[in-house]
Length: 98
Image 1 (tube, rainbow, N blue to C red):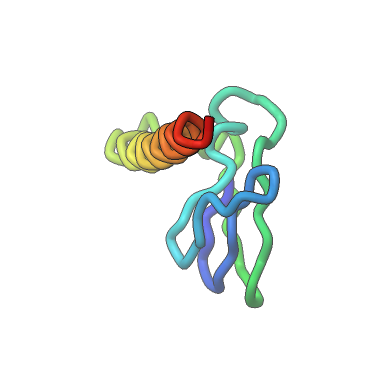
Image 2 (cartoon, rainbow, N blue to C red):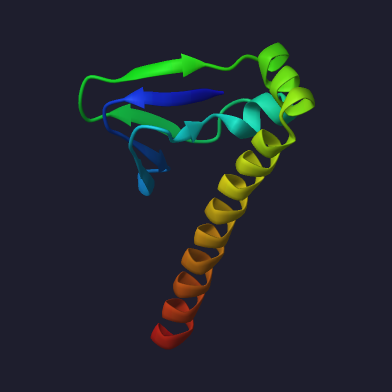
């Protein structure tokens, strides 16, 4: 997992913009939690600085700072809701076009 410390980047999935990232944005949280390969691409728009949060540090932060775990879950929930909205919009558009 990484935390964008400075700069601006963009998260895309199959060419679809998921999020524009600014300082404080976390990326790669799914991979550090479940060990899966990345599912999205992060592209820098400006010079960026990222802080690495490896699995050991992630677990330490979760153990020592429960609020950290809640913050990560909030990011995941927000992104999941955005994905749900996009799916519903695409489904509605396909039904309208039929």
